[in-house]
Image (cartoon, rainbow, N blue to C red):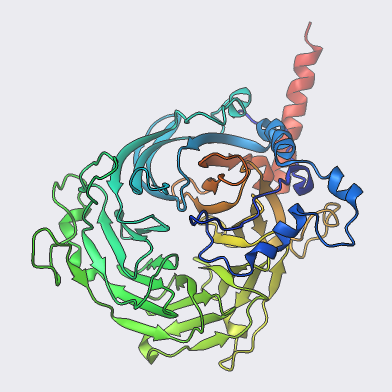
Length: 507
């Protein structure tokens, strides 16, 4: 948008309430299990909170719809661009794929999504084409004029893969983003060449699509913990068997596949499967034991394919090094006060690791300050969510910036460099928090920064509990007046002020 408005962000002004996170008979959203989560702070708030909470305070709390309407009114000021896409079925994972085309006002890019159905039609892995509007192109009056019940014209389904089971997690291979891995409710990791997979019509009774490769090694379901290595074609997974499993798919990817004109799959049909109708399988390079409960998330070091970390329902953060064996290098016994749901390793600084938990906090660890006997305190605790944190991710553009999404319906954007800076707003909002995306009306189960357009984010929410709908996908970019250096913004606004005054003085 031609944005010259000041955009000071008040987190309080844009805070929605979210879903309770309660698990129904069908697993909805991020919850891998239902233990003890009926009494999370989120559900306590919605049921009236603790006894000492007064009824008057509860009545004054705006509803989800009221807070959403408040947010929508601020969209033209806070956002440079926003696309809202109504989903028939919730998507538990969203990822950017390769950029396909660049044009004057927008770029076309692949988007990977899932459809988690109720069984009336198959679960699917969806490959979509997305038109990403460039910065300062969208007109302010058009940004907020979207219909919550409609599909966005910027998102178009390109291909459907019928997935064997629901898609809990999608990860693309950094060395070739046409290759994706998926987690479902099984012990296996499925590898797909999304360009050569046939387009399927998802109707009841349709046969599953055949994965290009199956990674075996877990002894129980591995549902959420999944990562691709930035430096080598390695895959990492964690599961209910309390183990972390490492694979190499180096020998199964052809170099010719990097050529977009290649018509064949870039995955060689090698491995254990000999029948043409069976997917080839690959066994693990290593299986790592150290957790006492389900492993919920894993992440590779940005600089080494041999170093990685994991978090789990045992409240532990564990660092591993494949060169030293299958035992933990460092185990932080109580990284949080509850289950850990997510972890991300800073791509710009390999000493910094983020974790998110059911205790509603995000914590930042410096691995230089962790010791082998499990002692180690976070260098900072970020407290801004009112429910379990489901996803954390560092910005691909700025080393101190990261996002966190939670069951409270919020996607918070933080800057660790701002923690020590005092300001008038410091008392009103949590330290380090400088933007809250409040466009989702239920738990934000996943989001992904766009490496090709670094301040553009795709996020998905599971709206079944709050709105009775399926899910919402939003692609958005905050106004650059919010994150650019203050002196730059002030100088620009001064120019804009002079321009307005000049125009006003003309007859």
